[in-house]
Image (tube, rainbow, N blue to C red; front, top):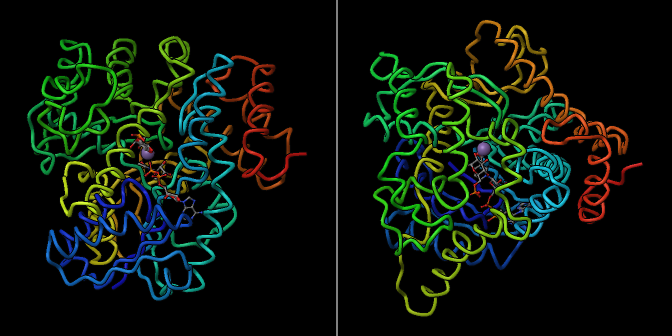
Length: 460
Ligand code: NAD
Ligand code: G6P
Ligand code: MN
């Protein structure tokens, strides 16, 4: 059984490979392949992955590191996708251009997310075509590549029969934090959730069958943030620190509680003070507190810079150090729920376990008062034929209204990309809740067209 990681040079690759390797019996994996378009980045990550598989864990899983599609995908059963089209350099543009115009600048939300979406739709379609050509007929692509909402809509429209499941690690990271706050074990927790990707709400969180949302509301009210003290200790400054300098007790789970991530955990308290019924996804902060986000942001220094100076730098410095000295510092690569989530999903598909996961899927009536063809995020039972989505009742007007605005903004950017339409792109930007006016939308869009000229289709 072959698993290929597309975007094999990603900072998340070592962690994901470790999660796969630790589940090798359930996955019955013989070979892991890393595929990337950036040869040098891929080579370096390959060195670390080789160490993880063969020296650290002593496994006999074959490793292939390649930039050739045929070598990468031939007879693969699973492709885990995590491409960042344009790299951190373009993430910086996605974050900084909107901020310069007084709008939220974020990797996957608002104008930044729309821009990233326009870069990623066609490379993801190309990936699907390559996998269709070379991989096993019953392949699965499990996709983390962002912006997952727009990517999933683009793939639905352009390749409706592709065997692809789009996923996100944020809800599970929130559950990690909730479990730490309430001191409960994640394995005993089940939850209900609805939304779009990076735009949803937990409506129930149950521990051993008992509802814990009331307790959680009290916790958040008392602490004025959704972060346990043990996590907060590691956040003494707003910048992420080198792993060896952190004092927190949960380093392996803690990527989401570093640097500027602080504000969205604080935002969980602020949103719950106004709307206490459901626990919001952290990403709703960018839509409900857009003005405040702009006020505490620095357009010269955004999350992309934090990541470049910490996660990316620590990882690649660590690999250079290993190549020079043969010593490895395991804390330089992240392992944890991000890798576990995608590897566990593959197990459910392969072994037909019908385990429950949150996935991004076509609505098809599961939320009755959302469009049939909306790509929504809902719990589903996962078996060998894919997700069996759990349908639910109508959602309340407030959430439905917010979701419709965001959904139509995302659908319009997909149409703009496919048709090469400037007007639809401008509609997508104007409709987005993070943008205050049509004129601002146009200013941001025009600057983004210039910045993305190597990546976007031409807009007429
Ligand atoms: P990264 O830049 O370190 O890694 C991405 C890799 O993708 C790079 O090595 C790059 O060369 C490669 N790449 C770019 N275009 C490609 C293409 N067309 N084909 C193959 N490879 C290509 O970025 P990262 O921070 O490790 O994140 C990787 C991806 O995972 C991003 O899209 C990020 O947004 C996403 N992500 C998603 C979730 C989620 O919840 N869905 C969580 C974490 C990260
Ligand atoms: C969460 C989201 C991802 C996003 C990531 C960014 O995990 O679910 O979709 O890519 O955060 O994290 P970063 O550390 O790169 O800012
Ligand atoms: Mn996500």
